[in-house]
Length: 298
Image (cartoon, rainbow, N blue to C red; front, side, top):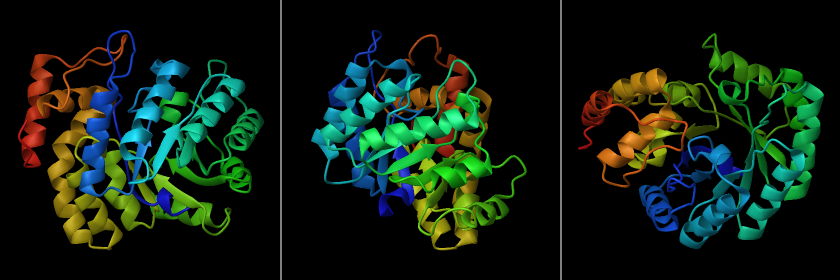
């Protein structure tokens, strides 16, 4: 599926303290992504705080997104949930709203086995009936996909892509070579971990699933296009400007930093869902300085 390529921008989901989605603000954020020319929108991913939202609010977010940007840009909706039947229901909701694709992480409280995750993914893919991207995010789920599991899932109908974390050894090219040998032609392998984005694309990755593109889509797109074109010098130049921001992402987690960026850009003035706490005033000044290094006035 071609929309699992290029830059996928993951938006925050603006909500009030009770977890009710502000659909007007959400539409405004998504419109900025469309205007910048990103390749797809990642809705209700980790950056979108999907785990903090009820099914009703997640459905409202998808409905609002499709009303605002549906047909203009592919929208990939996160449908992760603790129970398989809940994730199936979320997948059906997304399809009914007109979403283009699904993103599924193996959320858990009890640690899951490889076969349990396989069966979970198969069931949700069948329920949704849309192209599905496996969300391999051990930093939040604490589940590690084996190569064998990825190869099994790549043969499942409707499972067409995987969103990978950056490899611990830094050998993206080697990992891509290994996984491509085990998966069907056309199966999309993309990466998250914004600080490794340029390298993942230069190494042959299909997509950058980007946190920062949710609020800085034009800047992220310039880096994406340079890397996809194989212009390593330009990608390095653009990447250097992002380094102060990547440092903050690593120090505080990108979720907290994104709320600070949204406020500094005067896009929305909200705090993350509790128990997540906002950054301190001193750390917000560091975010402001990081934005200035990108030529963005905060």
